[in-house]
Structures are given as C-alpha cells and as structure tokens.
Length: 385
Ligand code: PLP
View 1 (cartoon, protein in one colour):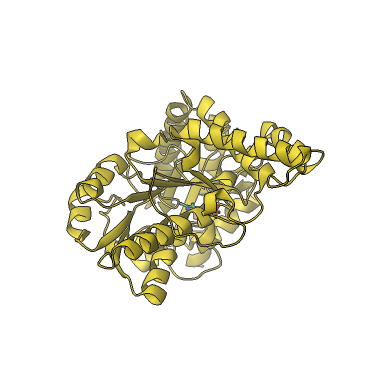
View 2 (cartoon, rainbow, N blue to C red):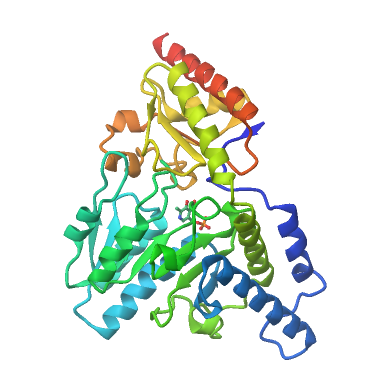
C-alpha cells in the first residue's frame, strides 16, 4: 500500500513511542501529586513544555497543552475573543478566512450564535490566498481577533502569515494561526511569524491522536473553555496527558531537527508528481497555489469523475489518499474550501488530495501517478457506459 494521506494523520514514530512509554507505565504519576511519582510526571511535563517552547521560539509559560488541534483552535478563537470582549464590550467581531478548518470556522460561528459576535469572513483568491488588502478591508475597530490558517489542509496553499499578522498588529488586533498542517514542513518560529497565538496537533507529526498545543503570547488573556482544577495555569483544567505532551514534544523536536533539506526534497517530488498527473490525466486541474503550497500536498479535481469513485479505484490499485479533508469525509456537500476558490460545485465533487510524509519516495509517487491515470480513466469509462 502507498499511503498518501499524511495530512489526515501519521503513524506514531518509534522514537516518540519510546519517549512516551515510561509515562504510560512505570512513571504513571499525576503531575499534581506531591510524591515522587507525581514529581517525576511534573518534571516530564515541564521538560515537554520547554522542548515545545524551544521549537516555537517562545517561553514555556506561553504553551498550553490541549487534546489536539481542534481544542487548540477552539481555545484560541473563543478564549481570546471572549477575554477581549470582557475587557472591552465594543470588541464583538472576529475575522476568519473563507477556507478555515471547521475547528476555527465552527468556533467563530459558535461565538456568533451563542455570544452575539459578528463574524467577518475574508475571501481568498482563486489560488486560496488571503491578500493583505482583503484582510485590511475586513478589519474594523470592533475586531477582537483575526484567525487565518498558516497552510490549508485540502489544497495546501500557504498564507503570507507574517504580512497578515503585521496588518492585524497595526490595528492592535491579536492574530491566531492554525499551524496544524504547516508544522514539520514550514518555519514555525512564532516571533518570525509575528503571531500572537498558534495551534499545533500531534498526530500530524508522528505523535498520537489527542495531543496538541496552543501557543498564546505573553500576557494575552484567554477565557478558559474547560473549568476544573486549574491545570495549565488555569487555561485548561484536567489532569494533564503527560505521555501525550512528551510525545508531542519529541515529535516536534524530531521534526525540527529533520527539517533542513526535507521541504526542498519533498517539494521536488511533489512537483514531479503534479506534472506527471497533469500530463497523464486529460482535463485534470491542480487546486490551490501552484508554488506557494505545502511541500506535502498535491490536490486535484478530475472533472467528469466523482472524487469518491476515484478514491475507491485508487485504493483497489494500492494507493490510499483522500477526497479532500478527512473531516469533511462522509459529507456529500462539495468542499466549502473549493467553492471559496470559485470552483463550480460539480467540479468540486471530483476533488482528490494526495499528501505525503517525510519518508515519501520518488518511486512511490511514480507508481501513484500511474495509478491515478488508470483510476481516473476507469471511472470516466464507467461513467460513459
Ligand atoms: N486544523 C487543521 C488545518 C487540520 O488539518 C486539522 C486536522 O485535520 C485540525 C485543525 C484538527 O486537529 P485535530 O485532529 O488534532 O483535532
């Protein structure tokens, strides 16, 4: 099997499993307990926090461990917006892009539905890019928060985060970015990016599902969403997932260490794969930005097919990929991300995403490109019969 669905999830890396194992077994203490076992767990947790902070270039106190990317996004969007409005009731608008992951979009819509916020949606261009001008036009004196993702999970487009964050800063508005897909592939230093908050998920990086991180700058106030014993400096109550935090920190450290050369190598493989697919499949369309995209994502529409049928055929041929985001799987509606690019709904239905991990090889992608041509050909043939 050739697994080309790494944007959905990745297996746990052996080094990560080895690093977390002790905290699932012998060193199973609760970090809040005042005995040796508890202290060992607390030390492991603070070591993990320091390692994540090092990878992000921030202070350990700015890191909150969460149950994943979704919770980190929820805490950022709701937590920052609610805290800011509590300090100034005029701040009752949030700005998001038209192609956010549901974790951000639904958090914003929740603020609208339950807390009376207004949500301003910034459009993207046909490549999925949010321009500085479009963001500027969406900002107002009432904006409490801007949340724009670093890299899109369906089309791989990378946003000019630094420039966008600068625009928000000019208006004194905190800027959050969902870096779940970017981590491991793109520079993630929060100072260089100029962001105030940033979300990461462990399972996209070789740590287990259910581990995540929110970076929130300095004194940025966050209204907690989970109340209880006051863990994570009151930002996220609940006995900490020590093994998950150690796993995430190990995965981030490994990703950071292995990054040099990786993005360049995989970008070349990606571009060769894109060329091969566009040549072999008449009518195939690349979605997302042609170059300003994640090294690891190649996404297409194959007009005249259905994405789901192509997927099934590809799986039969030994290639596993996805018809968009895993989160939208099971839904018949065309992807809102593709619609936001101006793609017609009947074409959006034909989307297929290939996403790679760091071990991807050129031989695998050559084989996959041949399989794509065969799969699309056979689905189109079936359609014509
Ligand atoms: N944000 C983006 C861009 C994602 O791709 C995902 C997962 O697919 C998430 C957030 C959610 O992360 P998690 O699965 O850890 O909840």
